[in-house]
Image (cartoon, rainbow, N blue to C red; front, side):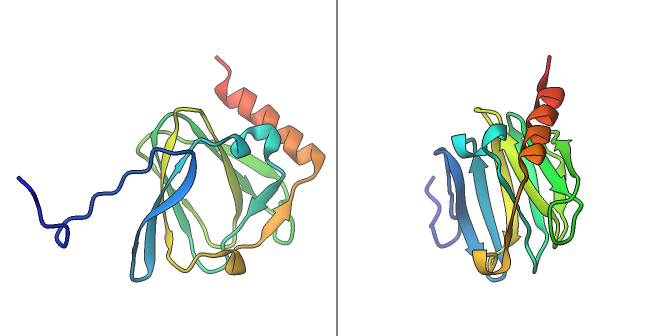
Amino acid sequence: MNIDPSLLEIQVHQEPAYQPLVDFESWRVAVLNYCDALLPERLHELQRHDETDEVFVLLRGRCILFIGDGQEDAGTVRAADMAPLKIYNVKKGTWHTHTLSPDAMVLVVENRDTTVDNSPFCPLTAQQTAEIVAQTKACWSP
């Protein structure tokens, strides 16, 4: 049975990286899949959103959210090893980034107006990147 597309829209994203799938009024739903740029040793900055929270839900695979507690810089970066199907709400103004396993898929819900203009980046020191690598190994070691 076919359903009129004006009643039901179906979106899929299987390619690497982030892709917005639905924008409606003030919100956006996107999918983040594994990409090489998010390998722990390649993480050299955190991002924050100055106008909105951002929600992550791990659908499959593994994902670690890295959260910085600083204001102007990243401060201390801590790892949250995400559990599948739990909602992780990164609060407005919180520095964050993530690493994913090759089979990972993460649902992202954010404000539709989230752009680079209201989402600054903060560089990580070499020591902070090394800590992210070490935290990933600690979380994902057998």
